Image (cartoon, rainbow, N blue to C red; front, side, top):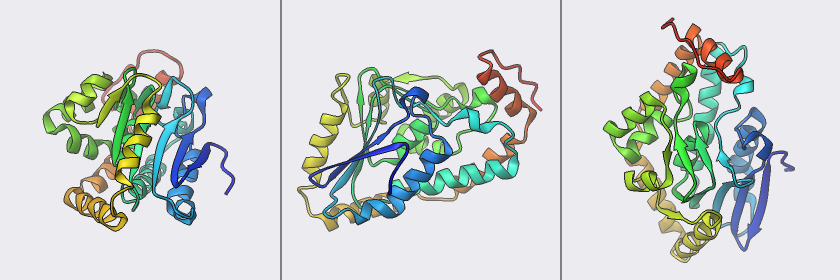
Length: 258
């Protein structure tokens, strides 16, 4: 398949998948999500001799800065439900992919970008990387698994704080909290990811696949479905309309609790 927003490079069985929308800070629009679905759902396993995948973002500023807010205009509860479920389906494809997937995080990993990184099996970040789930600033909640996976990595107490404040946090804190496997000098994320994958793919492939399956089984529960439903419920609020408009107009939101 020819992709518009993904670059695919096969390095001796390790595929480097680059999200290539640098002018939009690699934000996840509908097209990019459709291409991720196509890659992980069909195309990747057709690559002969594939051993693993590294996901990174084009440019130095951003891994993925979040969802594309320009596509939120006119979103109603049903469309919100479908959007969230689509994101869940795609990110589960990544999390359940039978080969190891490593995020090489350069710059911003916010909202959907943080959720994408958390769906990967392992995470390497440059020292300038920034993380966060800022959805409450828009009057909504994370919709691509963020309320569930952030707890898995950080624990309930810190996850609740970051989900409710929308605060960003840096790479060193992300490492200290358990979100990252390694922090490296800016620009070295991909090299470290390839080094780590090189060590993993030297092991027995079936054993690696079964490790992925067993670890995922430990965490899966109905909390993900609840997130989809509540994302849709927040989309229909007046606060969401105000939050999205304020974001696009680059002003502070005036939430009314409606």
